[in-house]
Amino acid sequence: MKFIIIHQHTIPLLTSTYFCRMNAVIISIGDEILNGTTINTNASWIATQIQPLGINIHEIISVADKKDHILQTLERYSGTVGLIFITGGLGPTKDDITKNTLCSFFSSQLQFHEDIYLRLKKAFERRNIPFTENNRDQAMYPDNCIIIQNDLGTAQGMWFEKNNSIIISMPGVPFEMKGMMTDRVIPKLSVELKLPFIINKHLMTSGMSESLLAEKIEGVENKLPAYISLAYLPSPGVVKLRLTAKGADRSEMENEVEAIAAELKQVLQNAVYADEVLLPEEYIGRLLTRLNATLSTAESCTGGKIAHKITSVPGSSNYYTGSCVTYSYDLKSDLLGVKPDTLVTYGAVSAETVSEMLTGALTAMNTDFAIAVSGIAGPAGGTADKPVGTVYIGVGDRQEQRVKKYLFNKNREVNIEYTCMFALHELRLLLEERIEKKPI
Image 1: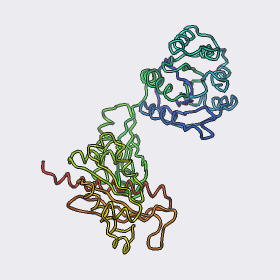
Image 2: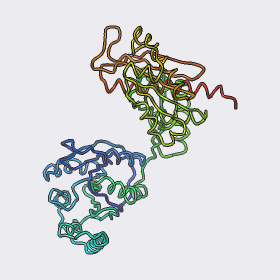
Image 3: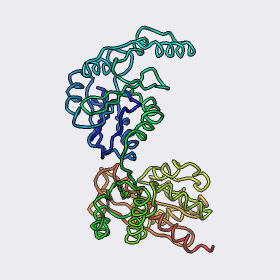
Image 4: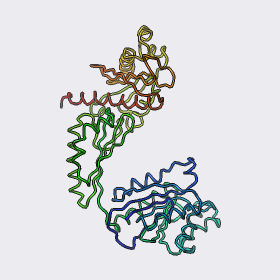
């Protein structure tokens, strides 16, 4: 049996119990999604919520606010998938056509629900908002659906069954849809649908490319049983490995996944920095806290983005003191103490300059650790010796400085992101070494 989800309304009670591996198709209704003015966050959020129930995401679709288009989509999946979630098009205005379209699809008529009407009217009165006839329409629902109460808005959810498919329709307003899913839909699905357990285990890695990771763990991956899969989820400087197991015995699967994760960590060694979903900047914060140490940054090509990542972590003020963003030669010299001769002889993008920036950050901001970076982000500024994407990254403390040269690519945004992530990676390795040497 499979599932479809369409952004619109959700339905609660299930009339029967199903047992099988289910696939979900998520369908979002709205012209604003198709023309790019609204990002379809609903579909991705729904997917994250139903996947742990043992429901596989088979397809995610966006459709226009056109009756024929919606009907064609429902016809395509009804009877071939088991669960259909619909989001969008349930408001009080004329362009909200989902409810009437569902009436056509299910050969039903709109029926007035006085209890919903009175509840909505009282809610409007409490907020001192006029209650119009458009709002009265929010008490009209197909006569052959089960209504799911919306505690956060006026559009109720709906539940239908046809051709062995369950169709759940929810509002498109994200916080209303999330409330309905969390409080009403998911609890019912969990009780009524007998589904296999899905166990996910994540390993966070940094400093190693996806291809190199795959090469190193090929032996482990080749031994995986059919019911356990390994996914590579790359981003600049970081690759998230996800083990997914599906089966009937949760405890047995958890033990097996943990054993495989331990084997992967043994192979990858310090490429793995966490066995949970954790950003590098979050992990760095934990390391600095353990060391009771402080951090500063000196940035040129990244323009303060490393500082932004670090300070996006709650509590970062306990260990992060600040940053010097120094693009010009003068500021590199005045704020960080970089020697003018160094800049003239080696240039701003050099190991020598970054080394002096690093020393300057440690001294000027009086911190235990520091990061310094300088590079050519592009698209202009490259030379034969230093093409676009050339970056020097330095990390260090009062005992040691480490400066490395990296060569990224020709895209400015990508170069900046890679510089940030590899700077955090290099600092992470240094901090881990310091923790190993720290007396207990």
